[in-house]
Image (cartoon, rainbow, N blue to C red; front, top):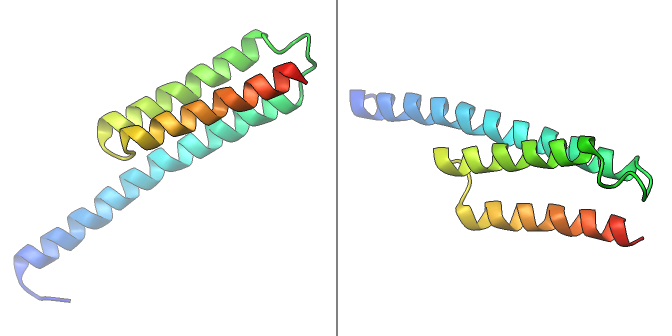
Length: 94
């Protein structure tokens, strides 16, 4: 590791940004797990319940905020959202 000030500052900023990015990604993963758990534990009649729509809305909000902050690429976010809806539709049709 270099000893000059700009390299030290760049390393410090990289560590800070990695911490922020990890925090966003972890919250997205946790909310996705919560959504998938709510889908798997409901009956077909209850698929349109408020709980599932709230969980999906929360996941969408977190993903969109991560894109806005530059943590995720917009195409990756779109792919994640698409897959979540696809899983919900598969559960609805079964």
